[in-house]
Length: 298
Image 1 (cartoon, rainbow, N blue to C red):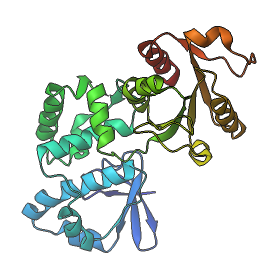
Image 2: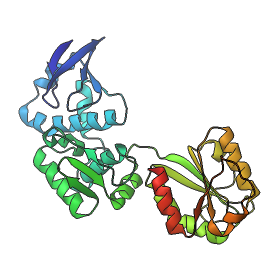
Image 3: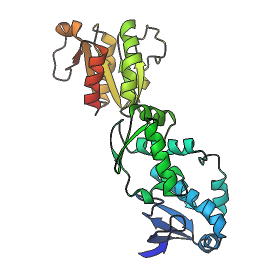
Image 4: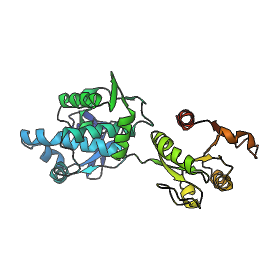
């Protein structure tokens, strides 16, 4: 396999000819992937005036890094560079560049506090569309001071607040749909909404509360078997012995969707169905249930 210098990160890497394009493999622009550049564009880009390259090429490198990290194909020619640099998707402010780093950590972890190694930093300042290492270090320190991120050497972790900010900014990582099944209990519904749904979201799920079909709950989804079928995880609370929860959770099991069962301790002795598939988490408070769910989801 031939090797060639990447114009955007200046690394000499393997290249593979594919028609009129060359595919550049595993350079700092795409450490775990590749991008393609029109072969005839190489010299025209290389011959650009130095000030123009200084202001442009690091942005192209970051653009390639972000898209390929999100498993999107990148195919470029010289005519694309100006359009990319002037695109509204390119972050300009330090705040927006910091969000890109939070998004990267979010894509590479499953929950707040999970470490992500970035090494060496000198080859990774394109994570923030920065022109140099000094700006990346400044952004890292800023995010640490804002308590959005923890750094321990080359290991980086999102705090719970950082995780929420990254999730809210839709960092290219789709949250997995998770349906919460509860019976006709308004107090229980309020506890789930306020205390438990945010915990579940930290572990990469988009929780949707699905109460009793006849119960009107603010913020809850309309009861639907389609929502259940679309879920990647079901949490079924059996407090109050709601038959519709048994039915919906059984429907999910029939579709091979994982089900976590739970039940308030006040009803634990009245569980009518004693089978090995239904062994609910027994909880006394929403805080206790949240703690147990964290262990299960991790």
